[in-house]
Image (cartoon, rainbow, N blue to C red; front, side):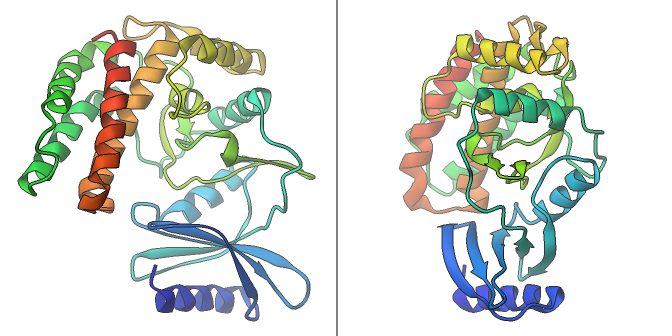
Length: 303
């Protein structure tokens, strides 16, 4: 983010909140967003978070979640300038420990039992089964830009998944179906002195809650259906719907969830590559990730 725009956006937020200029400490910064801790002269602190499209509606999601009883950091002020969202958020302070699987299951139960919000985009069965076709469209645009040329195996895998998508996407609306965090990882669950809070709602949507549960253990390691099945059992024990264990698309819930979560990630990676980041220098990393995830999808969805 341009430093001048960053300063102007923060100044807007401080004006809205009636605060004076603070000292600033970077917490995390990448090309599409950043987080800073602000310290004011009266001894109080706040979090300054900024992000560009498609993350520019997180303030709405956080306020909506709060209104529905989901524990999230309070939004003190928000503003949009030149396509960038800026937020002043409650500073939750240091975590007292890392979130574990029991914490994750309990938090998911709370989130998934929340009343569905009409303002959120919807990922139903029709949208789910369109993911491989949408990814193929992204691949076409990349190749028109003379990129991703030597990737026939990606096209072949997406074609095969698209052909199987209608059958394998069946059961998408079996419970839990509703609010999906979409970035549900232990790092998105803050365990503090005053309890837990969910962070990072920039890509929240209405859809299959199993995608949240499949994302909890991350995507860096090989998908582990047995481990996810244990997590699903924990989720049900903590009060989640027993339907979370039901077969769908002709597959056990854990394989369905892991397979479609990886396909969801593939489509997102490819959209980033051509639309949101659009930096040819990043292509090798994106191609490597897409190849790996598509191999997993073919195995998990038994295509």
